[in-house]
Image (tube, rainbow, N blue to C red; front, top):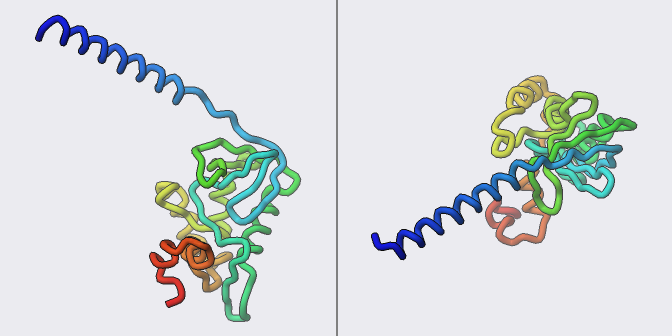
Length: 180
């Protein structure tokens, strides 16, 4: 290898190392927790101050979604919202950001040491989303289902399918075969 190539290689390696150090510094910076009183939008989304927050690791029925039980049609989306609202009512919610999705902070949120995502799944008012939670709420989900708690006592459409079939995304409607 000639001196020119060796120099270029050395410069390239130094730049890569510097970029790696910069990237590591950016990733190491802690993201501050978000805390305060929460206004609940639906069973997995709330607002604290100016921050829209999506609970990490779960999926809940949509606010306008309805479910069926032996007695007829139930507003299960509103029921999920009420369950989360009851958990946070008058209390300080502390959320630790995990990422972002659809202009919302995705966060693990707690009230007095209670993991809100876990509590919603345990009550049967939300579902474990194993793709995101890596199965951390699977045990609570299985127990809620076996006991017929919350949504597990009703017939419901999976939230992702409901969103696709009631939204404007033609590809999503086709993927879920909506209307067939």
